[in-house]
Length: 546
View 1 (cartoon, rainbow, N blue to C red):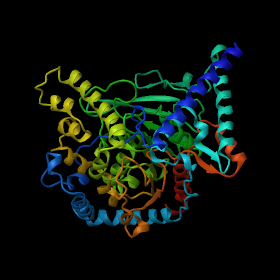
View 2 (cartoon, one colour; view 1 turned 90 degrees about the vertical axis):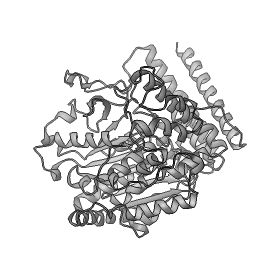
View 3 (spheres, rainbow, N blue to C red; view 1 turned 45 degrees about the horizontal axis):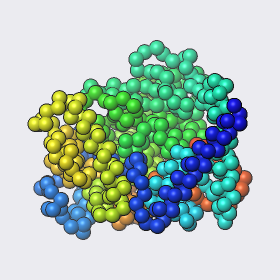
View 4 (cartoon, rainbow, N blue to C red; view 1 turned 30 degrees about the horizontal axis):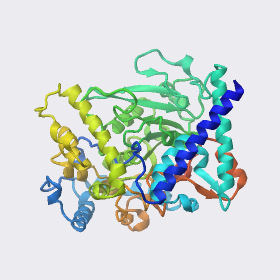
């Protein structure tokens, strides 16, 4: 059995290695790779009107792409909207409180010193290798998040050896019928009700079903830093005070808590001594949701509702004595977090004790990003077309489940959605109408997080790559950050390479450090490590400034 398992593991990893090398070579030669499943990318969601979104009313909606304004005009209009965004609907007292919080948070942001710049192995620095190769590497070769500087061949050989050994151990464990390496330790201590149950995962320790006020639900998956067999969100407030804090993590488009990047980021925060909860967007945790409405790029309702639940579970404690809350996300989820923080303003701190946020590959201007995604070429043929397929699948399900197969339904334009050849066409026919937007442009403008940056009160980190194939590289509003002359307490890191959610194959000098990182399949990649460093910095500064 041992020999059979060893042969199986070797063949499997050899096959995966060949696939990875072939994909990388094809990308480097600028040819189209085989169709790959879309991973966490610029999403499609929105939220109900709030104080912030109400003041963001857009003028005349533009219904077709042929009538779309030029890129320069759109950029100028966006700048004007950003400049005037927080001047409307804000009381003087509210503005003073917000400004005071921003001043304190800006000091925390300015004192954060980023680590060394992302330095990928040059043959693998191409944006498509980072984006696609990074996705496969996290899934099959997590040992390649880091490589030895000036000796990449040794890194690959060492990574292959560690990978095969791990695969061998997993197969042997299955033969022996042992428990999984990450059992749910608190299984015997769970409450027996319909909302709290065992999470179907070796990583996450508990799953909670959150019933939403609009008759729907979503799953929250928990990972605890110091699991002692208790259901943590049910324990007494006295034990909560001793904890470092809770990180609320949001994933990307059509992803979930089980994605390698989600678990990688969560593991980085757990190592800081913090508990982590991943909020799965509606319909993303394995079971379709119960209403026509799911989630979109600006849909902050579920995040804000979960924050209110966390607060209600600590009613006997003042906000100051509550464990600090931190927000983190990548891609689609990053836009949702930034928008939510902008909507909440000073209440993020005063009502929910949110003390920081760290975000990766954040969409900022959805209108201009859409132009990049739909421009002819590699990005459209590979990334946009795969996203379009996923969106059509959602529209198809909505049609069957909630429209009873009636093509004349008034809920959305089903025939036009199915005939769409671009994401914007489908969102104009499907997403915009079911969430009450006038058009896809209305949806993009009201959901773009760039319009909410001025309202952010907590220390925030945004890490993007200049070569991200999904985003307009010119959209990088450093002028809104405290270090660029603005008021928003935001640290903005714009690496030269990294693609979309790549940031892999980072070169390091220390061989012992490299080995330790390769031995842990959930070790944080460069970007995830930077996010964890920022949250640690914000938490360390918390006791001295708040």
